[in-house]
Structures are given as C-alpha cells and as structure tokens.
Image 1 (cartoon, rainbow, N blue to C red):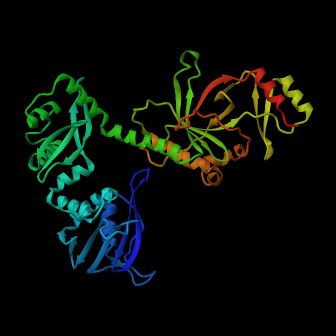
Image 2 (image 1 turned 30 degrees about the vertical axis):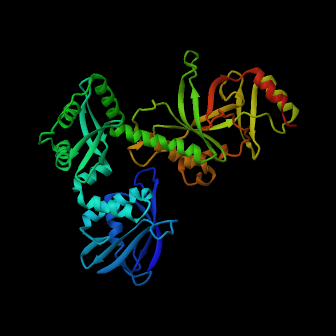
Image 3 (image 1 turned 180 degrees about the horizontal axis):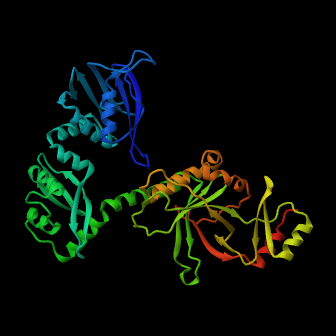
Length: 448
C-alpha cells in the first residue's frame, strides 16, 4: 500500500483549506495532492484514484480493481475516522455498500466537507448510511441549501438560501428563523425543492407565511413575520457571498502581523465622525492602503472596486546640510528623502492635506490600478488579493506591471503606527492640514 496526504480547498477566490486526508492505495494512483472542491473536480479526483502509470513518463491507465482507504490525519487511534472505496471491474463500493459513481461523488463531497467533525469510524459509517438512504435531491439541498424566492413586505421579490437538516430517518427541517424550524417528510421536502425550481406542485410560489401554516398548522404573528423576513433577507445569496468575503478581511488582520485593519474618517468637518474609507493597511517593504467606501452589507462584485495607494510617514529630515534645512523653513515645505536613494523624495508644503493617527503624519500617494482577471469578484476578495500582493511587494514588484513604477516608493523611513488598543489593532486615520508648527517640530528633530 502506498500512503500520501491530499488537501482539499474551496474552489472560490479565497481558496480556504477545507480538510486534509491521509490515503492508502493499492496502486500508484495518478492523483494531484492539492484538490479544489466542486462536483467536476471531485469526480475527476475519484476517477484518477483508480488510474496508475508504470513510470514517471508513461500514460496513466485505468485499473479494473483497486482499494483506497481515507484516514483522518494526526489520529493514530484504532477507531480513527476512515472509509474505504473499492473498485471491482466497473462497480464501486464504499465501506461495503454498493454505489454508483454519480452518488459516490456526492457522498465523497459530503464526507470531505464534514471530515473534521467526525470523532470515530462509527460517525463516518452513520454519515454514509444516512446519505445512501436519503434521496439525492435532499442530500444536495443539505450541502448547497435551497434557493427560495419570496415576496417582501414592500412587494419586491427576493432570493434567499434556506438551511436544511436531517431530523429523523425520513424527516428533515428547514430554518425560517433562528431556532424556528419547519418539519417536512422526505416526500414533502422533495416536492418543495422541485417547486422552488419549477413551481409546478402545491408548494409552487408559496409564501413563507403559507408554508409555515401548511406544515405547522399555525399562523405566524405579525412580529414573527418581521423576524422571519429579516432573517431571510440576511441569508439571501448575495449577502452570504458578501459576508463570507468580508470575514476574510478579519482573518488576514489576525493571521498576519503586518496587515492591520484601516479606517479613514471623512475629510469634511460636518462629517468628521463618519468613516469614509475602510479596508486594510499593509506593511511590506513599503506602506500601502487598500480601501473601499461601500456600506458594510452592500453586495459588490467587480474587477476593481477598491482603492490601492502607497503611503509614507512624514519623518524629520535625515542628514541634510544646514542650508537645505534653512531653505525649507524659508519656502515653507518639508523635503522627505529615501535614505536608500537620495534621488527619490517627496515634498510636503505647509497647507497641504495629510493624514494622521494622532501620533504620526502620513503622505498618501496616488492610486495604483490593479485589476482582477474575473469580472465578478466579491469586495472582500478584491481587498484580500491586493493585500497579499502588497505584503510581499518587493518580490512582486517586477511581476505585476502596474507595480513596477512603484519601486522608488520602497525603502522610506517609517515610525511605529499608533493602533487602537484592542484585539483588532485598528489604524484610525483622520485628515488634517500640514502646518508651520508641524514643519518646525519636524525640522527641530532633524538628524545632522
């Protein structure tokens, strides 16, 4: 038997790790050790599990008979979660149960998604038997939810995703609100699923009020209707995409010490307490901001819905002649040089708009055009992809065309940022004016 480890990741832009499995095969399987989820990808992976090649350069061929066992990693107990797939000619078995390749793909996706939740082999056996005894349409709904269209109180139609859970051997329930579940038999839920696609049975175009009354035999109160509607709107497909992508922003700021959350408050005095831009502050070899100005729950898809800018700390003059410093005082401007290349510098003039965190002053550069290749990338994914690119700016600067001209902005001196004293380590910036007092204070700290 040959052993190896396969990683399964989400097939979207986030590419999050879902699970890792140790597999033992009776053949030299022709598989990639990095897999992405999805029906086509899992189907290809399972078929490749039963292909082998004689040597590195030969063509992979499908075998007639083989055994593959999947194990939970880092678990050496005798009863660790595992399952076995056997191929005998054109017939497939999973833990001894005969199964078609089509159903095997669905069951395999179910097991991979839930793999971390299993404690022992009995849990896996139960999951397999439940799947095999449950109609395919219900299994699909449990994994992917039910796409349900309802009419809001204002008369506008909306699509939402309904959670489905098994509650018994032949019963399920769908969630209309937190802890409010509506029971269905297998026959009823299959009809409801089909009605949500075609609307050709008693559940066709049914409102959530009628659905609740039909299944429970009671009427929702006015207050319950409002709660259910708010819950369904919160779980509509577009909201889930937005919410999950923005959760990625939180993860990045917690996983990487050089990525911080960023808020820039409005420049207009009457809106000074309102946040105008939100996003991430990235510390690579340079300093960068990746921000947006959308509402928290606004669903945004596109290629470039964020603003990417370089930022410099405004630092005291470094190793300048006295006549240069005197000229700065006379001309009311501050010259900030790159200590690695004196030919690279920027000027701050008294009266210019700058940013401050209450401790440091920041000069914000012009925007950088960085596009996604896909036209429908969620806002959080746009921010995350740029943040990871800029975190390693020096390595990526020659491979990304719009970054090549940014190399002179690397190497400038920086201070320690003033962050909010909480677990999120938020950098809050406000607009201010560079004053004569700022100029004199910085020049008084000049390194000569």
